[in-house]
Length: 110
Image 1 (spheres, rainbow, N blue to C red):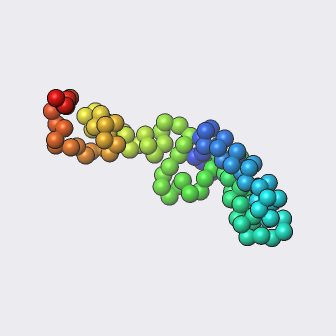
Image 2: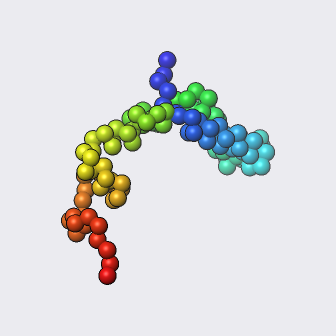
Image 3: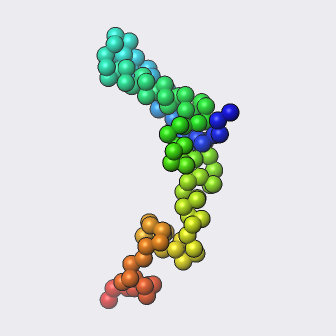
């Protein structure tokens, strides 16, 4: 059995997108008549539905990603940070980098 790596919010979004793309591709974009754009929409919709229903996305595996819980890839990145790096990451968006000009902390303009 494949390990689940699609969380609840991700799953709902995939199901919604799939439920929109399949009928749109079939009827509005001409997939039922063999139009290429319609066929692409149908395939993307079926992929979204399949990954949503199965709660498994094969594209997440090589990147070690998971949206199932707080133990996903983002949590692993944050776990590698120390407390000071964590606060810096929240400010700059990048763990381990610091701006030497802001080392004094709270700087206010005059």
